[in-house]
Length: 223
Image (cartoon, rainbow, N blue to C red; front, side, top):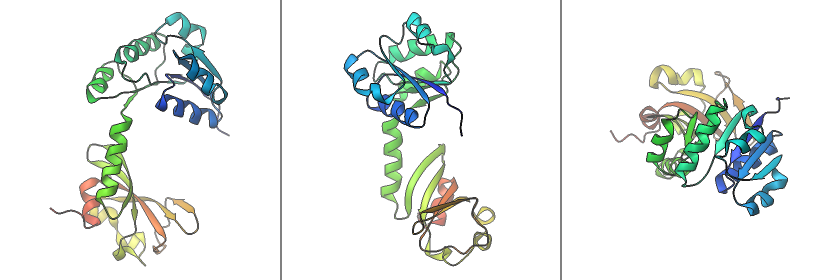
C-alpha cells in the first residue's frame, strides 16, 4: 500500500476543491486554507482539516504545519499577488513541491520566476486537448508532454489490424512508440504490450511521440 502523504491546498474554488477531494479520496492527509468560511464548511467532510484564514500569513502557515507537507497546491483564482506571497512564504518554510493554478500565460511566467514545481493553466490544457480530439477522427484523447510532443489515445488504424507491434515496427519506421493497449470489450489495459499479439478492432492504442509523426501515421498530416 502506498504511504500516506500530507498535502496543503490553498483556495477551495472549483479547482482547489477538486484537488483536495481527489487527494483525500486516495487516503492522503489534506489541509486546506480558504478565506471564505462557507467553502471550508462545505468541503470539510472531504478533507482532513479546513482552516479559514489568509494563506499569506506565515504564523498561520506555521501553526497548521505547512512546513511538513509533501506538496502544496495554490489555487487562488485571479489573485496573483496572493499566489506569489503564499509561494514565497512556503518557500521560506522549505516546501519544495509547490504547484500553482494560473489564469493566464503572463501569470504563469510570473510564478515561474519563483521556481515553483509547475504552473497549471486548466482552461488552456482542457481547450488544447479538446481541440486535438475534435479535429481528428482517430485521436480519442491527447496529453501534451512538451512542445510538439504528446501521448495520444487513438483508435487502431485499419492498416494495423491483424498485425503485431513487432511487424509494424513503429519506432523504427515512424519514431513513435505504443506504450499501452486498452481492450474496450474486456475493459483491460496492457501496459508494455505484447509485441507479438495481433491488434484487434476492439483495441485502443496509447502512443507517445512527436505530434507531426503521429499525425503522419494516422494519415492526418496534410504536409
